[in-house]
Image (cartoon, rainbow, N blue to C red; front, side):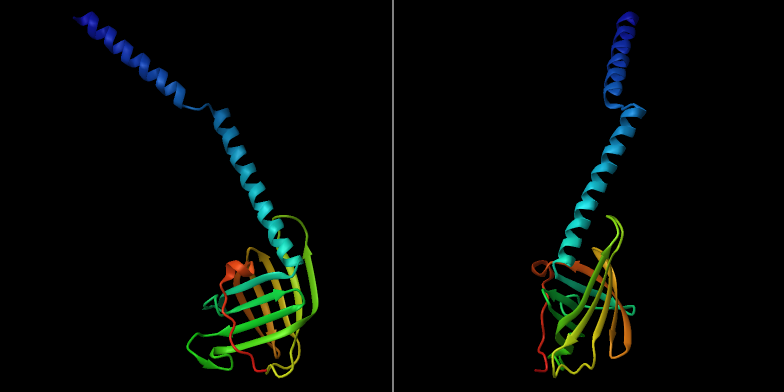
Length: 185
């Protein structure tokens, strides 16, 4: 009887050792898996960066604001929309009223200056935009917009010599779900 128990115990130990050996990866295998995962992540981030850069260079994107000067915003009604040489900038509180009907201002204009600088993948894409509002929009002079982006970005916005810092996200027009309010003209 002791021999049967001993043999059974040895068989269980052997089976356990075999299963453990099959599931345990060597240090080299774990290192290789980490390197592969890192390479895949870097490749995906670079592809995302290239797509973002293309949207910006093609002048076809929406920068939706999440906060301005530390205050939370509704990204559906606070944005900068660039399409070819046209631009729409809108700020609103969503409570109604205001010049645009949703508690803020909507300015449409033409892009005077548009400069993109992108050093290499993984680094911020910097965009300097000067927008000339259409006549009767209620804003004097050009609107300067400095955007630093890596999908989520920040923008320094100057309207009538007031400068505000907006944090937000760059998306395609179809993905942004923005609502454009009324303009003055």
